Length: 113
View 1: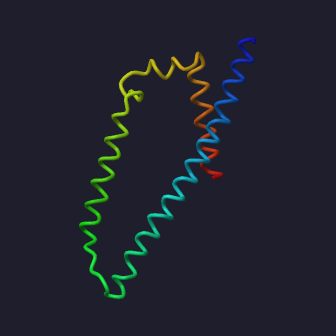
View 2 (view 1 turned 90 degrees about the vertical axis):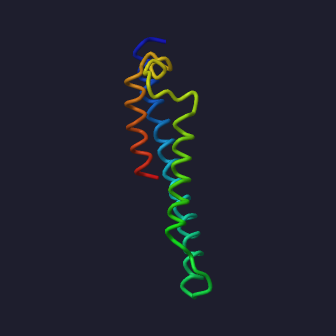
View 3 (view 1 turned 180 degrees about the horizontal axis):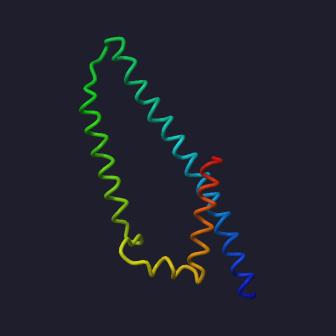
C-alpha cells in the first residue's frame, strides 16, 4: 500500500469515524436532555399543585456537586493524558490529517444528528 493510499484511507476513515461519533453524541445528548426535562417536570407538577415543597436551591447544589464529581472522574482517567502529546501522534503516522478529518466528520455528524 503506497503512502498516498494510506493517507487517503486515514483521512476517509477519520472523517467517517468522526461522523459516527458526532451523530451518536448528539443523540445521547438529546436523550439525556429529554430525561432530565421530564424529571424536572415530574418534580414541578406536584409543587404546582402544592402537594410538595421543593427546595430548588438544594437541588441545584446537589446537581452542581454531581457535575464536579463527574468532571473530576473524567479528568483522572489513566489513558487520557492532558500533559503529553506524544500518545496522540503514536496512534498514527498521520496525526494531523487523522485528527483534522475526524474533527470535520464530528462537526458534520453532530449537526446532522
